[in-house]
Image (cartoon, rainbow, N blue to C red; front, side, top):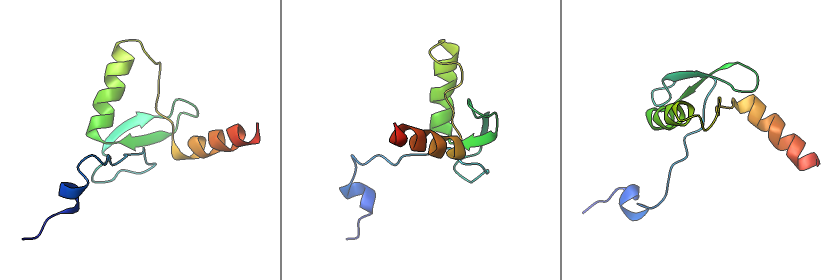
Length: 78
């Protein structure tokens, strides 16, 4: 009997990162909270982000891949 990997790694969470382009999985459009560029997220991320914004927890928590890299570089330099 064949099994798929997720049956063995059921506790492994696949991280879904925002992308700069629309994909089959990341089809919901948001704006980057740092630079204002358009990024795309998956449905679960969209629901989580909208709930955070509606509850007033964060203004715009979405960060594009370019700003994420820049932020990580600045953090590593300090």
